[in-house]
Length: 152
Image 1 (tube, rainbow, N blue to C red):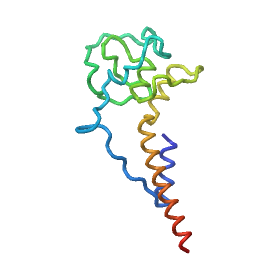
Image 2: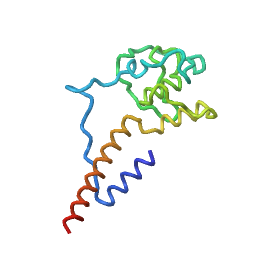
Image 3: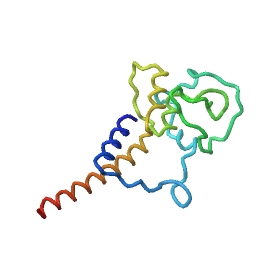
Image 4: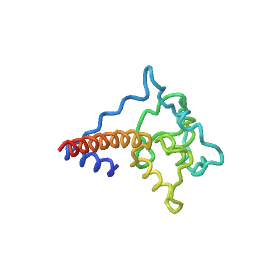
């Protein structure tokens, strides 16, 4: 997150503000990503996905075909798996945060460290959209400066 804050601060201070990205999901656009859809690519062979290694729970189940109701925090959040029987695995939390299913974590990290990394992360899909807008703004600024240079 610090990198995106720094980039935004620099751009603001030099007077280059990217256009706010247009919506990609919602009414008339792509559907919002449900819990089931976010977890769809996870298989029994996926790394960091051992349901037996997470805290077991006895809570009411809920539909995976809904949107996640809360943020993923540095400790993995207080949400339990939609089955109500356990916490989410590291892989499930990563996918819910928008990481690709094959994202590789540093092997030496503990699950707590991996959850902190996921919770602190700007979701990759959000970062991509934001940085694409930044790139377009910088390219437009470069073209404008080139035009002024040639005109002088």
